[in-house]
Every structure is written in C-alpha cells, then in structure tokens.
Amino acid sequence: MTAEFPGFVDIHVHFRDPGVPEAETTASGLAAAMRGGFAAVVTMPNTSPACDSAERIAYQRRRTEESGSPVRLFPSACITKGRLGAEVADLESLAEAGAAFFTDDGSYVADDRVMEEAMGRSARLGLAVCDHAMDPKMLSGGVIRDCPLARRLGLKIIPAETETAAIRRDLSICRVTGCRLHIQHISTAEGVDLVRSAQKEGLPVSAEATPHHLLFACEDIPSNDAAYKMAPPLGAREDRAELRKAVKEGVLMFATDHAPHPARTKSAGFAKSANGIIGLETAVPVTWRVMVEEEGMNPEAWARAWWKMPRGVFGKEVPALAKTVVETGSAFKIDLSSFASLSRNCPYGGMEFDCRAKLKVD
Image 1 (tube, rainbow, N blue to C red):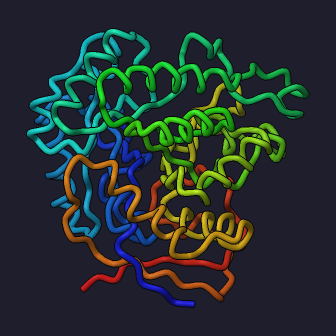
Image 2: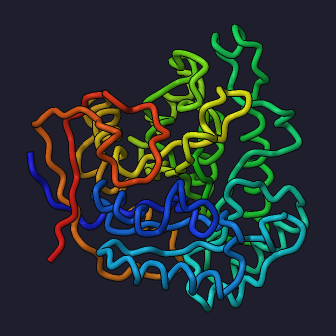
C-alpha cells in the first residue's frame, strides 16, 4: 500500500538546542523528522537556557531557517519563568512571538495558584497549556513502575497516582478557567479514564500517547537497560491495553516525546540514567504495527491521529505543510547507525517493521 496524507505533525519533540548539541541540534532534529515522514514538529522549551522569552523563540526560528529543512518547526514556550514553577512567564509576549502553546515539559507546575493564573491567562490568549502530568510530591525518587524487574533489582517505584493526581488537579483548573488543556505522554489506564470523562463532559481537553507506551509494557523490560527508562515510565499491560483502546476511539492522538541523550547519560541503568528515548525515525512504523496491524485500526483514522488531531492543539490554523507518504508491504529492520538523529538512545534497534513514511517535497 502507498497512501498520501496531509503532513504528519509531532507536537512533542526535544532538540537540545541550545544546551546539549552532542545529543541533538535543530538541524539534526529536523533531519530526523524528515526521515520519519514528519512535515512539522513542536519543540519543547526545556532547553538551556529555557525558552521563556521572545528572544528564545526567535533563536529557534533562526536556527530552523539556517537548517534549510522543509520541515516546519513551531516552538512551544514555558509556562513559568525558567521552568522553575514559581512565577508565570510573560505569556502575552511569548504568544505574540509565535509560541505554539505553553508547557513546562519535563517538570510539573506544582503550585496550584501559579497554574491557575497561567491557565487563566492562556485562555484569554486562546492558547493551550500542555501538562507534564507527574506530581513531584509523589515521585519519591522513583524510576520505574512496579514490575518483576523493579522488584528483582530493588528499584524505587513510581506509582500510577503520580500521573492521575496531576491530571485531576489540572482538570479542576480547566473547569474554572476554560483553558484548553493537553495532557502529554499519558501512561496509565486511570489517566485515560479521566481524559475520556473530561471530553464527554465537554471540557476542552486532549491527550497524547507515545509509540513506546503503546508498544511496550513494564513487564516487557528485559534487563537493567535505560533504553526503556522514560518519564512517565512504561505502564503495566492493562495500562497499555487502555491506551491502545483510547487511540482507536479517538480519545488520544500520537506524539513521540523524541528525547535524545548522549550515550554517557544513558549507560548507568535505571537508577542513574537520564529519562527518555528518541522516536522521530521510528514513530510511524511502530504506531502502524501497534494500532493498524495488531489492533485493527482504520488506516485513515490512524493517520488522523498523526495529522488532524495534533493540529487541534495549536491556538491558530497551521499553515500549509508538505504531504506525508506512507508505504507498507516491505519489511525492514531498524538500523540505529543509519539514523539522522545524533543520539541512539532507543530500544528499537534490530526490530522489524512493515511501514515507512517520507515527505513529499515539491
């Protein structure tokens, strides 16, 4: 099968620019996006320094123009100054500079009053707040969900309530402010239920599932291998089943949470390694296998979770993008050494898939 769709959009990527150029630059990240068939990406603001000013948004745009890539880059901006959670950033100037939406991704805004102020101001601007739903008060040094490997190695557990408590808090603020709320990288069955119920209630709420949370469960982790370590952590099999069901229902969209890291930060096992895996060059084949081949999802509906639903998170209409062409019927193995990304931190190496995507560039 060969099919052409409106350009796929990944609303959750990390390009480490500025900050850690050995992990990813804007140019290498956009090259990875193009290799993966993405017409546009939204970068997260947890760079160093954080993207909390109009000048930082301008930097992202300048770096994109310098790359010459046909992939469009839309910067998101911080909810709070420095992503420190203490004081709301100048959301008005960030919106004027072109922020796609607001997020402190990588951190949760734990102060209720700060989040309520941010969501109220975002609502007036017509922009969404995107939520890294992990309440730090419940983390307690956890690195993994409860599973046989965690018990065998004595690893500290991240309970599901870390996510669900955060979602409940922000849904309550959504009801008060009317702000559009997007839950990032959802990982628990109860979290999905909260989002599903909020949507039925008529709240302006959306959420995303990553390819890795859809493919793997914590019970599948083979060893003390930080390629399987991410935040939020992989859920249990019942969580994975609910995520797949919700994608098929149209409750959840796709996003990669592409999180490149240099090898030195991912080589110390679960206890000490950084969170996150890369995903731009594998997202289309992984989600095709999981949702279309295994779950029987209609290919058109699968594609909408990559192009139509992500566009709904933006506060304004997305400009014309290159088309995404999807091809199936020819098996191939993932070769990490061939990646355009500068990082290799992912568990897909050597796995075989039957779907590729490319951009149709005029």
